[in-house]
Length: 339
Image (tube, rainbow, N blue to C red; front, top):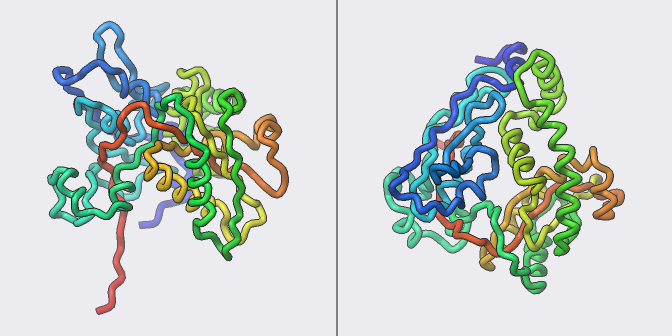
């Protein structure tokens, strides 16, 4: 059944939602606080009095969780689990019925992998598959710099990514100066604070404004990034996590077909190369999203026509282990086969 126009535009601001379930075993917890330190949103907080993590919401959002399972991946004691599913029940961001279902771990060989420990699956995978399933977004880095040789190898992996018309519509800005990265973070954070304050609470005028903005750009007004914006505030404007290396990927706005897609493929090549070299990475979209409203970002990075900031990558040596594969939500698959 096709959604009506009213269904497509309603409940854009804080829609009725079924959230994930936070499960925690206090008997196993080592009180390392890694889950709290690396949570990308404001979901996982730390109870200092009882020395334990807890999951929380944010200004009308019941649980500020995006289901990345980072807390589960970094927990050395395996005492945290996010269960269930994220499901928007009505309106603009309603979850399609074909995406209903709880998160599941990697099952590259189908149903026979269900309940099978990943360590057993790992031996049957190619090296590339293993990298894909073990890759995590890293948000806690050692201060150790990334060798220039490794940086060049990562850039070269990006250069050889496929692109429309073999046009390579991208440019790289490599920043190893933490002060510059901190400056960019702070400029971007100011814009994020304004966006979060607009979304922050339930009210008629906020509902009207967010609904109107979602009509212009639906992919920018989902409620989940708001929780990540709150985390930026809680960490005093940290966006690139004090990583020793940030690579900004610029797109040529005149690029053939859809240069944003080319940039995404390029970045994926770079992330896989970095993972193979023993490094950790994290895709950062906030800086590119706020750059149009913060000319100082463009000036600091000396971005000039025809280029535009599309994506940023944090790169460095992980401070903790991130290699625990986690569950993911279902993705619809349709087969068209020849009889």
